[in-house]
Image (tube, rainbow, N blue to C red; front, side, top):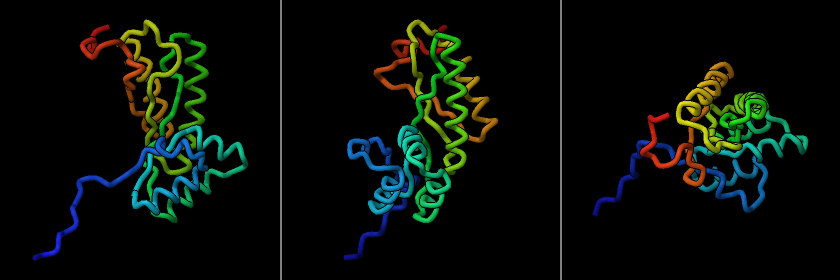
Length: 166
């Protein structure tokens, strides 16, 4: 009998590090664990990056460890307040988002998942589109692509049948 050939996947295996959050590992430990488990990439969470920096860590260390391990930081889950109905809250959210995307650029992460965060009650599809456009343009300026991510429990505009309506 001929030995099975390894599968040639059309994608590289990566882990959403949300599965590691209950263990309270720092970002470097997450990278090491994921690589040891055979993952080629990860989707990290912004709170873990921020906690690492607040504890005195350096963003360059995250980039270096990622490169040394050969594990790519494909993306990050962020909680940028781009969708809030209050203009002042949105402005503050976009400024925080600017700082976060700059941090992501420094660690070699090219994308940030950006679910609609904040008080979004009554926000229309057209308003979401315009607000996300602003975030997208900011991301283009910085070099980190925001990816619109709709979470089921935070549906942007009700049932999916409302898509395209304002």
